[in-house]
Amino acid sequence: MGEVTRTDVLIVGAGPVGLFAVFELGLLDLKCHLVDILDRPGGQCAELYPEKPIYDIPAYPTISAQGLVDRLLEQIEPFEPQFTFNRMISALERQEDGSFRVTTDEGEIFEAKVVVIAAGGGSFQPKRPPIPGIEEYEDRSVHYAVRRMEDFRDEDLLIVGGGDSALDWTLNLQPIARSLTLVHRRSQFRAAPDSVNKMMALKDQEKVDFQVGQIKALSGTGGQLESATIKGVDRDVEIACTRLLPFFGLTMKLGPISEWGLNLHENLIPVDTEKFETSEPGIFAIGDINHYPGKLKLILSGFHEAALMAQAAKRIVHPDERVVFQYTTSSTSLQKKLGVAGR
Image 1 (cartoon, rainbow, N blue to C red):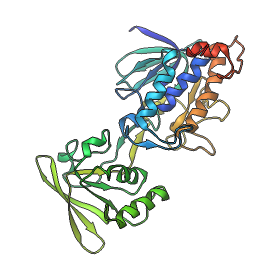
Image 2: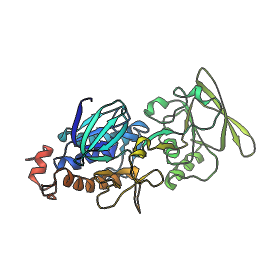
Image 3: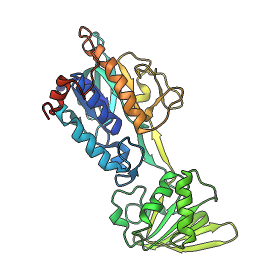
Image 4: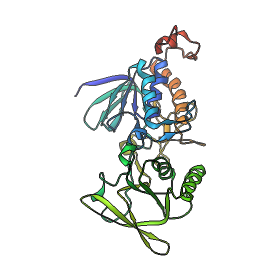
């Protein structure tokens, strides 16, 4: 048997909601260890759109996805969370004392009294569009995420899709691109109406070209795109492009979590709305991976869920201790934990 790492709470997923859970649990003196399949903290925010602006985080009129992750990491520094990256949880079993033994796909073993699933939609990967030969252009001139906006400066961009990601990146990349064409299979969009209106305004100003249709073929050499053929309503159109950003959504997979004996609802984990506990006592689910009536898949909803989950986790880890609700603005003990007492 390998070395066992013991912690109060094991958090599966190090995205924004998992990171904020560390803060709420830390205020209650609970130590956390986070395990994530990615190679760094931040979840989808860091992996898929680090420079994308977010507008619905309280007190931040706008903040980049990576900026939000950075602020969360700064916020939880006083609690010294531990991280294990590039790992997937492969097995979970309950011990005789009610705690959990969790094993990763590389054989690391963790023991914790509470497990919190904050894995977003599970493991995820962008959907590849059905375009012949697209594989030879991937990672060179076809990209499924924008990690650095500067990589697209002075390029001829072709963006495909009709959802929020396609419209958001059309608006954000247009100022730095040499040219930008948006292609969607129909003239109606699934994106926020304000984003659609802004894109149409850019189209009217001839700063963005919008085509109704679908990509039929790609042309280029050595992995470098030169043009794409669009199958339009009446005829085919060839568009010069050096970069292609297809936004066809993500394929979400729960992976081994689906084998933990939890009740599932359409690949999501049902929870109560008092503690956000799953059908297994001591296992909680917060963020996009959970399901309950009225659920909104927003980061701020996950923050709320983390706060209530922490109160319940405290009672499990330290059942003999009274849980006293305190405000960080007025509690000297909480301010000492945060290192801000006396300021």
